[in-house]
Every structure is written in structure tokens, then in C-alpha cells.
Image (cartoon, rainbow, N blue to C red; front, side, top):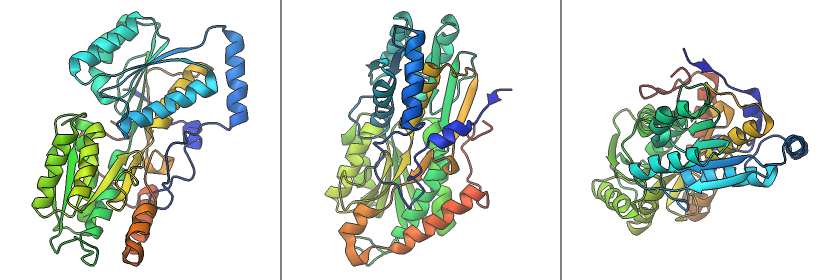
Length: 368
């Protein structure tokens, strides 16, 4: 039985302004303990050792994706500022590179190695036991080993709200280029379980609003192929979708570009992407990867790192949310559908209270 934890400190570290649908805003600010406590603890840690903590983050894809990887890097850079850690970022676009980068980090003797996504999990599982004195962390999935700390998210809950918003949006035929068909789309990067958890919530949220809605689904097979993302998105618009959710990291740049090119609409992911193609992004499903990365580094700095544990960041913890619709509101003016925001606020409260239980893909969730 895996040991499960959900730290009160973690919940307190979440940005209070990020509440579903009502106050997303920018996610560039990574929050943890108040600044004075952070500085004091960092000073205490530095007194114990003249050498800074050496941290390596292994990415599946490249920085500059304006999405998942950039969010993770924001948390890491914040940790550099607050704790004076030594940081190395290793980027790669293939499975061979991911494995080689992880092994390189192990052999280079880093104190903490963070697998930034679930694609790294298998390589950590295979190798962490051979480096028992090294601390490992994995984000977006769970690895049950004594020197590995895992952090995962209720992306299904955030996606439920995104699906509900999309289902309501596709009925607003007074908005330019919204047709009478009740069809929405969804384009993912790699076909992996965590993205199926995204889709499970998206589908449930959409069908909560309209049980008969049609949802188009596609995978690009890559995190770094914006041309493929655009191609799949344009195809879904051709099939009648008014709005497509992006769940594709760097590939998602093409999804958002496709929305602008077709004069249609999209939903962003991970970071606040509302201004990437202003007037064409309804909202973004924010996933606080920045906080996850920051907090695991903080735990290693302060000596509270707990291997063999999993933290699960749900909607009620501030782990996921929707942005505040402000960019699209400015673009649409008096055509902006305020009822979507109001309904999402209502649904978010029902999820937090447990009145609505969002389904998980197999193997995900707080008890997974």
C-alpha cells in the first residue's frame, strides 16, 4: 500500500487568487511560504552546508513551449532565487534522450533529480534504486520507491470545468463563427494515461451540460510538433467544432494558431494562454506545475523531503483552475457570455464540496 500524503503546507502554498473560473490570471507568480519564512529557512539551510543543493530537472520536450515545461521551469527558477540552488535543465524530444538525460543526471551526482512529466516515470522506476542516496521526484504521476516523491494533479477536475465551458460556448450562435452544431474538439500531445485523465474530465463536464454533445478527439503523438497540432485542429473545425481544447505542450502552439487561422476558438492548458491568440482563447485550464516543482525543491532544501509519498493537488487545493475569461471578455464586448463564468463558478463549488464527483481515468485520482 503506497503511503499517501496531502500536506496542509502544500495547500497553503497555492496561490489564493487562482480560483476556478473566477480569478485565474497569470500563473507566473509561484507561491510558497511567506517571503520572510522562506528567506529565514533558506538562510538556515545555507548555514548547514557551504554547498548549494544541486538540482537537475529532466524535461520531456523543450523549454519555450508556453505551457507545461515553462510552468515547471518557473517554479525551478523561483527556487533558484529563494534558495540559491544550483540548477540544471535537461531537455529532450525522444524517449532515448529522456532516458539518457536521466542517467546523466544520476551519474553527475545531483542531490535532487526531478522528472518533469510522467514520461520520465519508467526511467526513474528502473534506476532510482541504484542511486539510494539521491532524491528523486516525479510530477504528474506516481512512482512508489523510498527515495522518490511524487506529485500529481486533479487535471480531470479542471478539465470538467473546461468541458462544461466549451459545451455552453458552442450554443452561443450570436458570437462570430459559432455554428448551430453542438460539436467541440480536443487535441492532445502524446497518447498517455495522464492525457486520458484530462479527456475523461472534459467529456464528463461537456456532457453534464449537454448529454448529446459530440466531442472530437485526436492525439498528435508528440509534444513538439505544432504543425501537426494545427493540422488536427483545423480538421476538427472542418468537422463542425467551434472550440478545441489544447492539451499538447509545445504542439499546442499550433492548436492555438489554428484557432486564429480558422477564426474559431480554443481552450489553453497548463499556463495562462489566454493572450497567446487574444480573442480566440476562451479560457485556459491552469495546472500548477510551477508550485509542484518549487515545493519539492523546497522540501529538499529544508530537510522535509519524504520519499515514498504522493501529493495529489485537486481543485480545492488550488492545484488546477480556469483563468478568469478577461481576455476573451474584452474581445467580445457585449457578446461575452457571462452565464458561462457564473455556471463554472457554481460547478467549481460543487466539485470542491463533493456534490459533483469527477471521474478519473483508470490509475489516477487521490487513491491511485
